[in-house]
Image (spheres, rainbow, N blue to C red):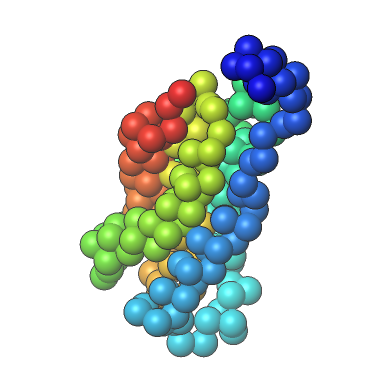
Length: 200
C-alpha cells in the first residue's frame, strides 16, 4: 500500500479512540485508600455507633458531596464543555460560614491532631490521584490545569471522607478548617500536576 493510500485510509477511519474507564480507576484508587487507612490508621472506636451524630454526618457528608460535585464535572464526556464550577464555590462558601459559626461559638479550632490531619489526607489521596491521572493522560484536554485541579479536589475530598472514619476530632471548627485546607492543597497540587502532565 502506498503511503498516500495509508494516510487516506487512516483519515477515513472515524471510529472514536478508546478511552479508559475512569470509574474503575477511581474505584480502585479509593479502595487502595480505604485499605491503607484500615492498615495504618485504623477505625475510630465505635465508629458505626457514632456515625449518626450530627458532627459525624457533616464531617463525612461534606467531603462526599464535594467529591461528587468534582467527579460530576471531571467525568464530562466532552472536554470542551464549559461545565460550571459555581456549585463547588457555593459548597466552599457554606463550609466557611459553618466554620465561622462554630469557631465563634467556642469550637476547638486546633484540636489534638492538626498535623496528622494535614499529612494524612494528602497521603490517602495519593493513590486516588495517581489512578485518575493515569486515565486522564489518555485523552486530549485543552484545559489540563483545570482538569488536574478537579482530579486533585476529588482525590482530596474522597480521602477526607476515608480519613474521617479514623479521626475522632468532631468539632466543626476543627474539621471544616483543616480538612478543607488539606483538600485545597490536593486541588492545588493537582492543578500543577495537570498543567505538567495533562497538556496537549
